[in-house]
Amino acid sequence: MIKYAFLSVVGIANIVPKEPFIGSMIRGCLGYALRKTVCIFPNLECKKCAKTHKCAYYKFYENENELSNFRIDVSLYQKTYDFKIWLFEDGVCFIPYLIVAFEYMQEIGLGHDRRKFTFDKILLNSKVIYENMVLLSKDFSSLTFKPKFQADNVKVILKTPLRIKQDGHIAQSLDLTSFLRSLVRRVYLLKGINKKVDFTPKFSDFKPNLEFYNLQRYSNRQKKKHEIAGLIGEFKIYDLDKTSVELLELASIIGAGKSTALGLGNIQIDII
Image (tube, rainbow, N blue to C red; front, side, top):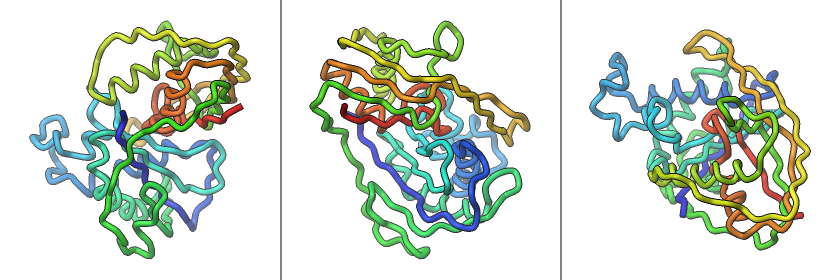
C-alpha cells in the first residue's frame, strides 16, 4: 500500500486571497523556497547536476520522467492561504527540507507582487511539530494507507477542478470506468510500476452533477497565463465494488487526474 504523510501550514496572516484558486501561487512560492533550501549549485542547470537523485527540488519540480510524489491540497475560493502538502513513498523523506522551505516562503511572498506573510504552525499528520518559529518535534513519521469505508454507495466531491485527458483533450464529462482505471495507473506509477491497467469496476448506477470550469494561472517562469480548466461538482455511485471504493478513498489522499502537484484533482469522499 501507499506510504504517505501530510504537512499543514496554518494561520497564514497579513494577506487574504483575491483569486478563486491559490494552488499555482503556493506551488510557485514553494518552488523558489525549496530550491533556496536545498540547492548547492544554484547556477547549474538541474538536469546537469550529479545530485538529482537525492534533491527535493528536482524530485518535486524538475523530474519529468516520473509522476510527482507530492501534491498541494487547497480548495476553490479559500478565505485564507493555509495549505497542505501531501507526500508519497520516497517523497516522505524530504519533510525536514519542506519545513525550512515554508520558513523561506514567508520572506519570498506570494504572487507577482510578492505579498509577505507569516504563519502560526506547521502540523505533520495533524500533529503540531512547529510553532512560534520553534521546531517542537523531529519525529517525521509517515503513515500507511488503510481503507476505512465499508459502504458501497459513495459521493465524490471535486474540491478543485478535475482534469482527465481523453482522446488528446481535457474531458468535459466523466466516464467512470476510465476515471477509476486512471486511479489504478496512478497508484502503480507512485509505486514505480509502469504497466498496462486491466481493471473494470462494477456498479449499478452513476449520477454525475458536474460542470466544466475554466481557470487561469500565471506562470512566472514562462511569463504567460495558462488555462487549467476541469470538472467541478460532485457525483454519486451506487453498489460500487469494494476495490473501487478503496481506490476512491485512496484518491482523496493522492489526488486524481492531471496537475495534482498544482492543487487540482483534490477530491473528498463521503458515504451516502
